[in-house]
Image (tube, rainbow, N blue to C red; front, side, top):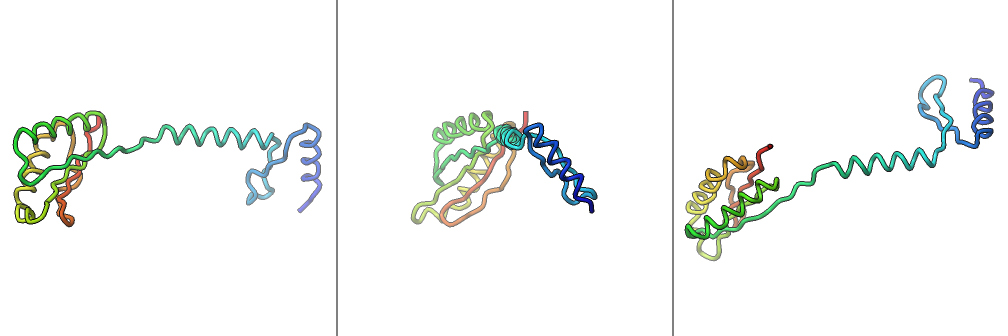
Length: 145
């Protein structure tokens, strides 16, 4: 391979006060471009930052129930859940079993399924109720507008 075109390109870049940047080193012959490298890096960083800011951040809101949560408390928490889903946040609803209340697993599951049914116009169930230790957890994702 001939080195003279590279020297000539370097001379052109130096004459203009810019840098010779290798764009595609694998190509035959290698592809180079005369540009201001610092400015190129700055604009590349700026583009990446803009893309990063447009990426959506997933917010997860939690609502906690007991296995024997009464109707008034349930309705109160359901209203909050509706608001969270309308705002576009994911919902993590869970029933926490204290002490011997673990014997009421069915009641906890019924409570979470009832919540899912009440909120089906605002979101869809992402994960059905599942027992993890002393918690029965269910995830609901908001519906797209």
